[in-house]
Length: 195
Image (cartoon, rainbow, N blue to C red; front, side):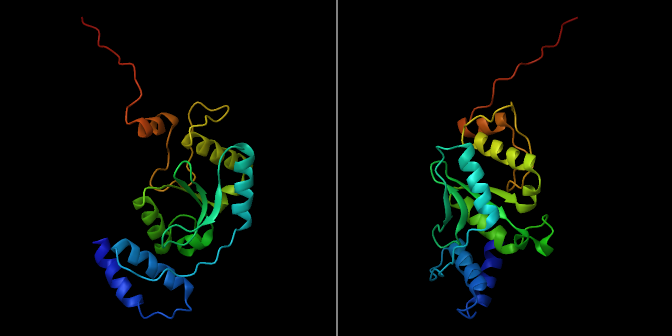
């Protein structure tokens, strides 16, 4: 069903002006999803202040972590932050990524980009910029990323904080471990007493 809608969208947008960068970006992503050839638009990179601030705080917290900013992957628009050694992408989502800027409903091009990144095998972490209004929220974001890259956050046995993880709002350390190993954590069973 999605591919049918993308094909219709692709057909409609094919005649879009080459000067319209946003439409060209959507066309390139739709073509990628459909497996069609399409010239890759020239994407301008722009490292925003929230991206820079978060990258610097993350790097300060995990000095050995390799972080690449504004990296283009395949025909997609550049990703905000790439952790290449962990196959993780961090997207800092400002209000323009949401319908009506509400920080609740992501717009179509954002959803398509996230879907393509996941299809390519990346884990995508989305962090809305309104999260940065609270320093404790930033720390929890960094702690969650530490968990995802297998560096245990200090002071937390289990992290469960919603910060816009695409389709995975609350992931605990145990659940993440289970995803990595494919094996569930050993749990104690309660036995019924015979009477």
